[in-house]
Length: 413
Ligand code: KG4
Ligand code: ZN
Image (tube, rainbow, N blue to C red; front, side):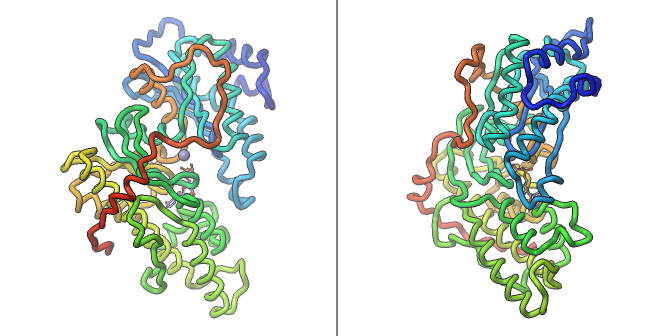
């Protein structure tokens, strides 16, 4: 905070400001860190986050500034607004994470920053700040893939060995991948259109849940989960898509179209205007949540069977990791548990604060890469952010060719 007051907000960090920032950073003479220490910086979407993590997985300091409230008001993320908010907050957030960790910048082993994939304008803020810091400190730079960081987070909280299966479900991502090593991924399937969180956010907006007294401060997905508890999923029928497509890809845009049609119909029946809350909103939330959970579960079930069939996962005690903002949905988790019980797998989820975007996962990914000696840059010449970037080798066509039939499971919760 002291630094923030001295420097004030800035648009683009100048060299002078970075030097000042470093001079002012707290030094703790006499304190000796035996482990490697990584500062992680995340700005790929709408969270400005930073953390310092050591080699053993201790989180020494962290800070985050969430833009959710601002974007909730505008009904979605406006990239230039997100960029401006990152610019206004990045220095303070990095400073807070470092101060909390009681690590001086000179003690860091490396700086790790998300450079792909994400919103171009947001990624740019984190990258340019990091490159100046790296230049001044003469530290190695570790570029981070956002999804890789999400996928590896579980190894910080649990003792999980490679290989394991990961399902990443959030507002911006939806993929199923086999994690064979720190940067060794096989992509089994992904969403062909929008991500599940994005769809839930749109359905919540169409239902005007922001006006609901119990949901006004919640993200769309959380509001749907909350209301669903009061509703009856059997009052409306929403069929999951792609039931006869035997691959591990997902689709969520159809849910939006169907719910939009049902909501319009219900508005007519209840004699209310668009923008008012339906009396059947809770039933709608319950039905859409159930259908989404079943869709996600079926694709994941197929991925488990495929990996076992090909000897990519052990027959028993394989691990399924579920992460991303939507993974905090307990109903979806319960449905996935039915799948993992049936396939003798273990379902693991990072704690909610590590499921959503954060700096810890980026710092930890830096530690994993440092330990494995992968992608540590001593020269950052020519480094660019990449708004679009696939994760690992795409084998989704092979998964589709295998056309595995998934046995029916009773998804009653
Ligand atoms: O991982 P995240 O914080 O950001 C990215 O999208 O990267 O995920 C945010 C998404 C939002 O779409 C939000 O509606 C959804 O996660 N979400 C949920 C729940 N909490 C957040 N979806 C379903 N159930 C929840 N409890
Ligand atoms: Zn994310």
